[in-house]
Amino acid sequence: MSQKVIIAIDGPAASGKGTLAKRLAEHLGVPYLDTGLLYRAVARDVVARGQRLEDCDAAVCAAKAIDAQSLGDPGLRGPLAGDAASIVAKIPEVRAALLEYQRGFASESVRGAILDGRDIGTVVCPNAHIKIFVTASDEARARRRHLEHEGRGEMIPYEQVLEDLRRRDARDKGRSIAPLEAASDALIVDTTDLDKEQAFATVLCLVEKRLQT
Ligand code: DC
Image (cartoon, rainbow, N blue to C red; front, side, top):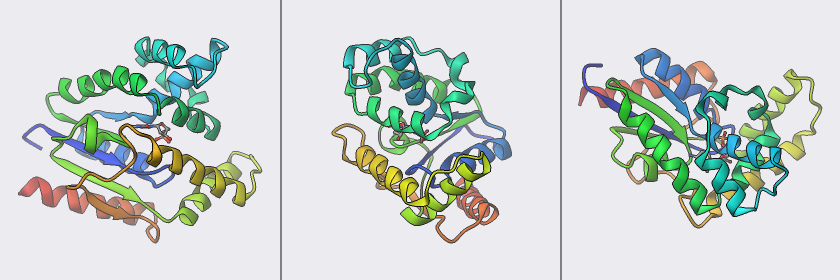
């Protein structure tokens, strides 16, 4: 890749966007930012201070003080952290505080960057060279999440996983600011019937085609 390329990858929870984005970044040799981790870290820090997730001042304070070093915390990965993140993500001032960090990440690498999230193609990097919206049916996403839970020995019923995903999607799509949606110029990749290899091959093919134009 000779020119600087910003790639925005958005999609709902468990669509596979994170795995695809990370692998694509490794393949292209560019830095990768999982922006969901920022919202997860804000929620973690609010709770750690004994405050409520809906407390706007507490969440904004945590967002302004976000520490990039703490994003590797394995405690950020679970479904409870994702749900909590989706609550603080509704607060416009939290989004504004995190916007600068995300744009800084995208602009600072000379080779370009890949960011994944919910609003990368629409708000964070509206001028991204390539925008991909990864999606999959509710049931396929819930099945994947359920298997991941089982793999970690967490016995959460499939129906509950499905319900939790739908609730989070509704919150992410229904918020007044930067809702989860595909940018009008995004390439849509539906991974419902694709395994990980097929999904990656599909995305790579789209990206390589775009890079040649
Ligand atoms: O991608 P994830 O599941 O780690 O994201 C957790 C929550 O963070 C998600 O439900 C909504 C919020 N989020 C967001 O609002 N905007 C982003 N760019 C990334 C995540």
